[in-house]
Amino acid sequence: MTPDAARQAARALIDARNAVTALEDLPEGCIPATADDSRAIQEAMADLCGWPLAGYKIGCTTAAAQEMLKTDRPFPGRVFGPFLLRSPAAAPAGNFIRQGVEGEFAFKLAADIPARPDPWTRAEVAERVACLFPAVEIIDTRFTRFAEAGILRLTADTGANGGLVLGDAVADRAAVDLEDAEIVMSIEGAETGRGRGREALGHPLEALAWLANDLSRRGYGLLAGQVVTTGTCTGMQYVPDGGTATAEFGGLGTVTVTFPA
Image: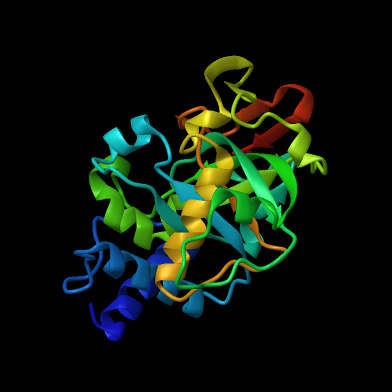
């Protein structure tokens, strides 16, 4: 994909997001055919949108999500500053085409994880984590049909990230058994999904290492202060306009987001 085609695709996605308009597809000649194409569009979107970069998300870290999108690997997405929220959050439904929610574990970085030739390990990225957050990712895509859009289009579309809601920081991350830590998601008071930290590539820190290496391959690093959310542990559920989603993280806290109609 040429740089001009990537920028044209990115502009279409930015315009659709600003107008809250669904796309049947990207313009002819701008449809990603490879993972590198989709990442080039996402990078062009980050350059053109004017929103500060707050961090990243990781999609398809579970077998169920990979099966739904017919892939065998995760994908990256960017989280922009205007869409990084604190719980309890209100995110107007009119800002989304269709709002989904996922319960996840997120990290804030204390130090950079720069691009380098050698792969980053889980232990190395763990040393660069400042704190842990219970989090709810808001899933939204500019494409009319989510699953049918496919992983390449969704990656181009900032990884289908509509927003990220953080709970209270957990400073002593090392004291938490993240592999076994459970999240219970409820919508309008009814449980809709539950799962443990191991859903995210076996451990949320494994997901963080995966992202560091995926970005490094394209010459990018992660920066101190950025937030990375590591993938759903509860599956994705849609929330009706006016509805409220609540993710319970046991002793780690609760994250709530309401979508006022």
